[in-house]
Length: 410
Image 1 (cartoon, rainbow, N blue to C red):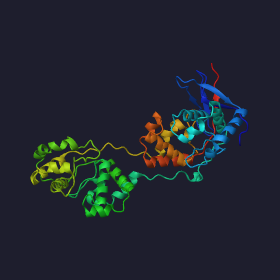
Image 2: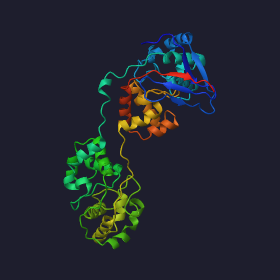
Image 3: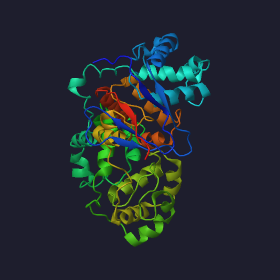
Image 4: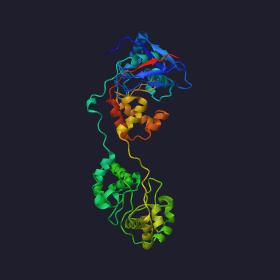
């Protein structure tokens, strides 16, 4: 039922010192959340009655409606829905645009000549409206995000014949794929696909793979348990250890690289390593640093170095299993409320928001274009697929209004 002429507590810079607010969101489980005052901030209650809301509507009609609609439903691509958004948040953001501390020239130019009182009333007006409906396909739920590990595992079936089950080679001369940083493995596969690395079989195997496919495959192998290749080696391990001293700077003391772009060698197939060294020496593999190091090695020394690294125990790279959209939303809901319906007046609701706006905002936090210590920490680990999944999820959640009530002092 649409509300008419209510009196709102606009928690714009809220709460008399020592008091607190509670929020209630219809359908939310549990007790109302207590919102503590922000230390060092002059928090005062601002009441917006029918007159203030009506005046706010005039401000909105003159200055805001062309992008956000008079009903608070974003009418322009990338313009957020602001109907029923938390009034304190709207007012705080408007002040930030006016001060130029929130980078958006269009918004700053709109609000810079408006008084703080006008901004307060506009925030009260939009906060008084019914929330935007969720995305049209809300009943279907957000589009399912593909599981990169499952996709990588499925793709690895075509590789197992040569590289072994779970990426541990049992074919002499063929490398194991476990224990390698996914950035290195991705770059290597792209080089085979593009012809920079010469191997017709690999080139044909990877010809139809997209960058996303290759990334999934690299991630799958990076997260598999590493193990030494069981294939025999013919070199002298002790002699190889001495000869490998010059390699430790890049490939690690125990053959475990600390640099994503440099492969770990521990546990690798010895015949493959020896062939790779020979390739660098004769120029069939292109790398000036490796060519210089391999130039002084004869065939026996190459086998010795290969035998040494093959004898070492590989270690898994420092790679975390990616979070699903459900995992990420649990983290976001801690601040933005259950299903994106914030009960904190200072934190925006996300439910029912425009999907394109959510994508734009998250990308701005990731790049640093928008400044927020908390959001920078949260968004820094997001990939493009994570951003799209979160935006799709919250756009399809039902937005709910919230009422803030002052608790009487004791």
